[in-house]
Amino acid sequence: QGQVAESGGGSVQAGGSLRLSCKASGKIVKNTVMAWYRQVPGNQRDMVGYISSEISGGSTYYADSVKGRFTISRDNNKNTVYLQMNRLKPEDTGVYFCNTRGGNWIWGQGTRVTVSS
Image 1 (cartoon, rainbow, N blue to C red):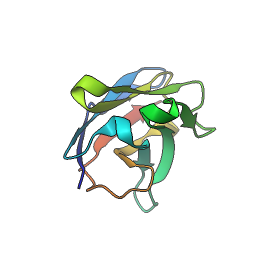
Image 2: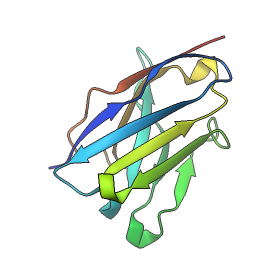
Image 3: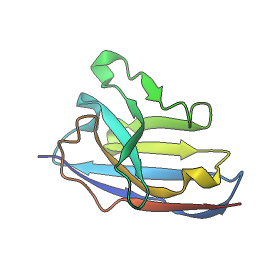
């Protein structure tokens, strides 16, 4: 079963940028649809976006709230998926997780992002 470890979170001011990393082990990220999720206290994890498998073309999808600001990419050599977050807003604050689109790998601890106004 695949496992992931997220990193790269931090505290930034609105308008700033962060790049999150999702290092996978046990499975190969390019062979599946990998997604990023955001969770705020008391809420469920919401999907921020995903990248399709390489064989499917690697297309990306984004939630309306982040479209045009966030970009998901993948480094096959490092078996890692990235989330580039630009023009951050306070409402982007939360803990970010990555997993398959179906959430069927072992969840990591997530990485916390705090955006202050």
